[in-house]
Length: 466
Image (cartoon, rainbow, N blue to C red; front, side):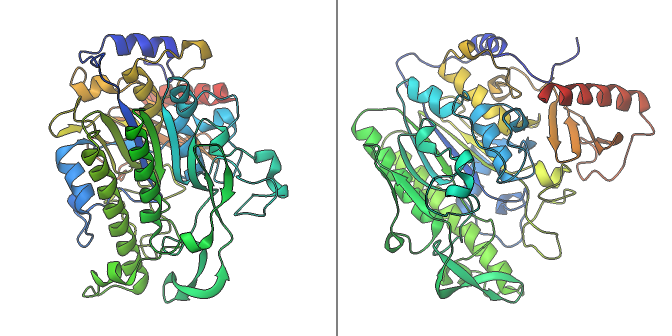
């Protein structure tokens, strides 16, 4: 039988019930979703980066579940974030690009589902799924000009928030960086960046965060508040759902003098030192988050996901971000634009290091979380584009079976366990990703029947998105 591109919720719950690993009824699993912004597949020291210092990510690479072929559902940020929370292709809800559309109020998604199940939900960092103010001119669309897209996290199931609409500098986030050779970097005094942090406290009070509270490394600012939220949840014996969406290493990339100094001996430009330093700061913040889980006694029973939202910005001559030898970068459906570093740490269920070679995606996170927690979502009757991947993590299965479909701008792709179809305007290329991850040898002329079959299925799927 031909694999389907989307599975109904009822089917996913049946698959979850058949999993060979069951969650003990007496335990409650917390969920933490961490995402970097524009981190390339090769931007991890353990994956062979020649210069980066990323000890926390290296530990996850060695000791947690490592996804060798994990895909952002889009090559830009907003659509990928929508796929994480909903498990659906973002085009279904009108989020087709960065700063396009918003997360609809009635859309079933993780925060609302877990909130209804008794979880306290917190969002920390970049939101990028709608505007955060109807009155204050903020970021790309905030204020009266974007009121139709007002969709803050505190009105989408999150109890506590420390959030921005879009990007900010990765150090002193409220100040516009100055210029230096090769890119954006140093702080320029007296210039407001124009994207604000908004907070919602446990009593539902929403306010703009005072700039005086926002000096220093942005990743640390985000994680400090996320850790406090976790500690409060533990103190009140409440399970938690925490979303930590870093701004790093998205432009404007700025690192502290201390984090840059680690790379002073390298024969690289200042922009590259800022980039490396900013990723080292992110790694340190991630380490603090994991330490908080351990010190509060929650590490074993917390499902911690980590990934990037798309590939690195720019091109290989101008941007320090690395794809690990993959073709393409951000805004491309070639591997370098959508294959990203990804790990899952959940000691209670995934003891010991594991490597998953089958393709997985950000659209798989929501169905996997919901099925693992045993939450009944059949009432929505909305199909997931992702699937529950716990059978892959448990070793019950080694192949995904169903392909992952992509559509962005005029480009589309279909990725399976072995092959990948990619193209636009009816002209498609075919690659054997097992033998050719760099997508260097087009097999379309050698396997025309496969191209025709997959093209037909991809076009049918695209029509179903409308």
